[in-house]
Image 1: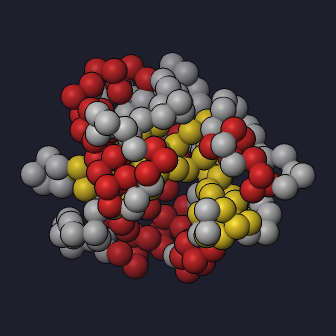
Image 2 (image 1 turned 120 degrees about the vertical axis):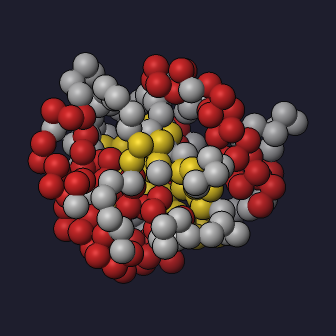
Length: 226
């Protein structure tokens, strides 16, 4: 299941968040070689990991983190606005209460499928499910062009925001991915996903509506229960 941690929930689960920081360091620094963010304490944490960052650690049946994603509100500083604005050229990045930036998406390469579904597929579908539940209407992504093609091939509605730019010997393209019920149905059907992938706990607040509860948004109740 994908845990959903942000705000007070992330504070309450401080032990799991420590595991998140170490998992991110292991994956992005030790495995992928992002040495610019290497830290001597073995914790990958940055200036955007504030109370409104939404964390999605995916746990296997043994309780180990095997996948992770993070969403950042575009109404606050985020990677495209504050670290990689050159990717937009002379254009302004999209911002809005229902627009989030999708970052730090990763799955272990040696992890076994969970209930017959690959960890990476569960990660993508779980984030998509959450966006539909709480009303996030667009996700900004900065990644390699081949991953843009992966979004297209897995049913996502996407819009490139600019042409690819060369960055650290790689080409990076910014684009918007739009969560839709049809895309969630595609993931469920093609990956054999049954039921919800989210472990929301009790009384989880929506990041868009303050005190409003996710359970008060009924538009995807059929899909979540499927």
